[in-house]
Length: 181
Image (cartoon, rainbow, N blue to C red; front, side):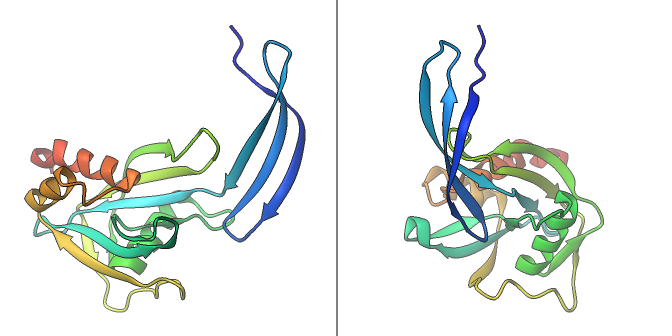
């Protein structure tokens, strides 16, 4: 069975700094047509960072889309033409004040493939180096960097205090592999 949908027509509805919204008319495998509302995003990078003392770096910030404070691993969007690895190092430094000798890939994933093409590149590092004068955060970012033990993270996950998908995936990875650090 063929699952691919062929785009017949695309109408851009909005083009912003972070994403574009479009509506496609597609031809389905059975010959019928349907509409698809889509969001196109340049992608993002997130870094699961564990300090030499065994603490996980978490960024606490208000997220307007959910009207709540969110606990997340350091992350940010890819700039045009930027390499994901380079972006990971930049975001780690901006949001935590650390850099790393090496970032290890965990996975690449789509955040919400039903309507959005945002790909998130997820990295891990426990080879952190404190940066004396770290790069500044984005002007519109208001974040607090906090550190949690593995036990605290486990409890936060169990209590539903962490609800960001990329962060949950990264932290589950950390908990499953903490003996191998």
